[in-house]
Length: 153
Image (cartoon, rainbow, N blue to C red; front, side, top):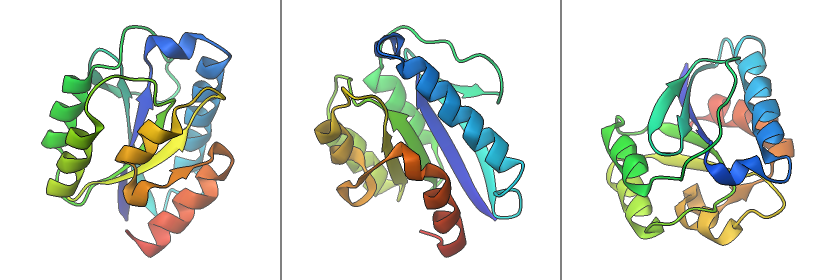
């Protein structure tokens, strides 16, 4: 069974343009899928990221605010086991050195599958940290995740 970590960007920029509702919808969809279509192929753990990275219990209200703390993200990435797969839901509107994030991912053999959230998403920043520099569309997240789990990374 594939172990996946879903990292949900909950920084203050998500209080704009309906992005918080989109994050909630996508997170709920992944939660529902984890109890259905993913139940035999994936074990999914959820985390939120703003000022810190914190575990998230599905179906709790997502709280948006604060800033996307680069150091907190790097510390969390550095704490993960090698060969971990992360589904990262973000608008890419954060400061910090994406090179450092990419180097941590390579050092720990992390597979960061990035999904762009919001019309104002910075796909350049997201591409810098994404596995193979590919930024995925939200509409494909369930299908992509099934394929990811079935084939491995």
